[in-house]
Structures are given as C-alpha cells and as structure tokens.
Image (cartoon, rainbow over all chains, first blue to last red; front, side, top):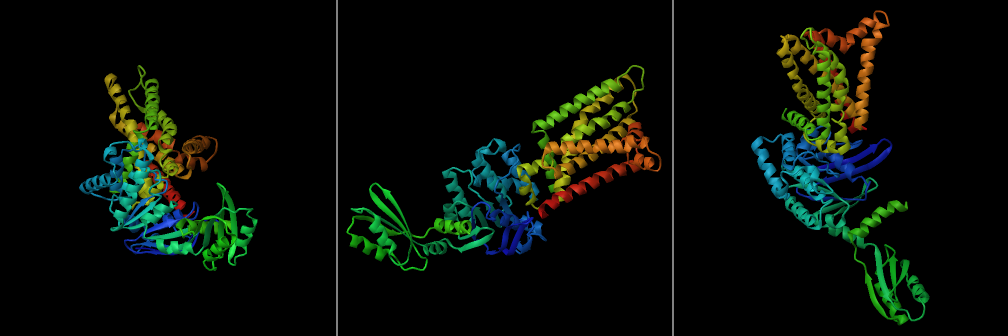
Length: 315
Length: 239
C-alpha cells in the first residue's frame, strides 16, 4: 500500500509537484503517465525516500518516507530512470553487492542472485562487465537489482527503455507476472506499455494529477471529445460541402485535406454536442457526392494524453 | 556494519578496475622510490627512514587528493548516488564506507614501500620502532588528507575541481601553520605551530615518537571532515 497525501515538492522557487494525493492498494500496478518534466520522477523520488517533500507526505506499507526512510527503502525495489550502474563491476558481482547492501546473508544472497539472473534473462551475461553490456542488458541488470531482495513494492521508472521489441514484450510479461505479488508503480511515456501492463493509470502534467482511472475509464473519458472523419469526392469544388458541414449545429472545427482526389474532412464537435454522424450523413446524401468513409473516432488513451498535455501548452 | 563493509569493499576494488588507480599507484611508487634512493641511500649516514618520511608528507599532499577526488563526485556524475541512497543505508555509511575504501587503497599503495626498510637492513641495522612510528604517521596523515578529499568530492561534482581544492587547501593550511608563524610573534605563532600537521608529524612520528595528542589531533581532523562530508551529502536532499 502506497499513500501520497497533498504532496508538494519545490526546487527553489520552482514548484515541480503541487498538492498530489494518491492511494495505491496492495497488488495494484499503477502507471504514471506524463510528458517529460511533468513531475513523475519527482513523485517517485519522494515516494522512495530519495527526496523529502516540501509539503505533504508519502508512505509505503504504513512507513513514512522521511521519518521512517530506512523501513521504506527496505520494502522498495527501485529502478531509476537513468538506470545508473557501476560499469566496472561484473553482473553477479554487482548483484552480490546490492544483496550485501540489503543485508542478505551469503546463502540467501546466492539464491537471490541466481533467481533474478534467471528471471531477467541474464544467464549468459553473469560474468560480463556491466560497462560492456548493451543498453538492453543493462536495463535487465537494473531490473534484476530492483527485484533482488523480493520487495513487496516495485517502482520502475521507464523499465523498457532501450530494449528491443522482443525484450519489451518479455519485460511487460514479467511485469504482469510480478503484479500478483507486488504493488507496482511504473512510470512511462510509452502509452501502449502502460495500457498493456497497468491496472490503473494516472496522467501527470504540470506537476499535478490530470486524470486517474482504469484503462477503460480513461478511454471512455477520451471518447467525450467529438471527432469525426468524412471522406468524399465532390464533383464541383469543395466550398459548398465545407459550408454545409460548418452549418451543422454543434460543429466547432473543420479541417480539410485532399488525398488521391478524395477530400478528407476532420470534424470536431463541441464536447457537449450530440452525435454528429446523422447530420453529416444527411449532408452527404443531399450533396449526392460519392462517399467512402464516415466514422466517429473512438476515444484512445493517446487522445486523452494529448488533450490533457496540450491544455497546458495553450494556457 | 555489513553495509559499511560492502561499500568499502566495492570502493577499494574499484581502484583496481580503472586506470586511475594504477596510474596513482605507479606514480607514487616511482616518486617514493626516487625519494628513498636520493634521501636515504647515502654512504656514511645513519640507516634511518626519517628523510623519506619527511618528504613523503609533501608527496602525499599531491597523491592523496587523486585517490579521494572521485569518491562522491563520481557517484553524482554517474547518477549511482540515487540507487545507493534508495537502499537501506545511511548517508554516513556511504561516506565513511567510501573513505575506508580509499584508506584501504592508500594502505595498498604504501605496502610495497615496506621493501625500503629491508633494503636498509641489507646494509645496516635500522631502528624498526621509528620505522613503525613513521608508517603509523603516514597512515594518519593519509587518512586526514583523504577525509578532506572526501569532503571536497562531496561539494564539487567535478573530479578535477575536487582534486585542486584538496591540494590547495592543504598547501594553504601547511603555509599558514608551518611557514607563516616564523614571521609573526606569540601567541599566534605558538597556536599556529600547534596546529601544524607537518611539525607534529616530523617532530613525533618521523623521529619514532608516538604522541597520543598528535594521534587525537589527526583523528579529530578526520572525524571533522567526514562529518562535514556527511552533512553536505544529506543537504543535497533538502535543496
């Protein structure tokens, strides 16, 4: 269980995170989604006890991240964003070092190292120097180090960064596998990754939570936006067709492009307007022009993400 | 305790996996060998290591900061400080562990020079008591230099800057406490002379005298600089 209450973190006069509250129950896989500089890493750093909050608090399994920082760290496995490693050490040497830091006894350490080496597909790289590994293998070493002491909470900042498509699929599979026994926080800006691996998604932008829900809930929210695509082949000019679409009540914007002689209209309706497919269909039939496509775009996480993040850019 | 040992062990071994460690080692052995040959190996003079110890004081002033310059700054540059500081260890364990690792390397660097007394033994009968005191003094001075180097490395993320700051700090300190008092009167000269690590070293250890007040003085200095380094590392979280 992770609890974040009214968390605010300022760096000097810059407020990186403002009044964020979040509760992550045991066993949940939570995806923190947001553009660069949104405040994801700051939230994670406070959660892991690396940074103290300016205001508010964070707790892991009931332990405060500032006053009981050691208890929090004992229960956390953390893969930082840049995945910093000691390049001069060999893979098993590094994992052994991490085991010692976490206070694992010799026999326990050996078992733990063997387990994570197996689980993170590092068997062939056991004796290799970390500095000589590819980025993908380094990422696996970071993941193995985070899992080594079998923490109940895993915090993974960009876990698939640098991996090839097969490794990404395997890592996502591993995350899903671990999900049963761990509470997980996964930070990413890769939408499909979060969509596939997380039970719940929190979209962070400009230091605050902008959306919170399951994948389906957020997709539904994304669908609130009215976006339609219409492709027709007008016989004489496009002006009258465009005007007819614009005159439909509830249409707020019409974008027009031509592809292979077909005119594509991307129509945005007011958030509160009714379904515009029927009046659009009527315009097409009254114009008596060939039509090859008319559809309402379904809500996607990407749409919601873009909408939320661009709201800030516009303001 | 096991965490402290783990940090120290990793730090110690890391010197032998980078070229910097071997360069420092080779440079020191070359310079100390020259010092020994030029200052000790003379026909007709007493079989004493004292000239070697006296000159080593200055040599280490330039060598020790090269050992300590990377201790914390390298962790900051690589970002490994984040994964270290999110493990269940204290800032003090990290700083002291790294310092112990550096002292370990310093000892490994001094170890080959133990051949010098054996060379003296070949020609004469050196006083092993004073040789022991001399090495103990070098160890204490090394520990002191390295503790300030650890502090400099925690303040400046650039290794070169950390090295230069440490060298200039000790040059200024030695100038203020060993050279300046010769030109000013009491009571300041007496106070400054008392603070001089060079005089304390050459008047005690180098001569074969083990003075507990001097040991306490050096150990206090180490504790002072290490506590300051811990505070600097801690303060980074609150900025």
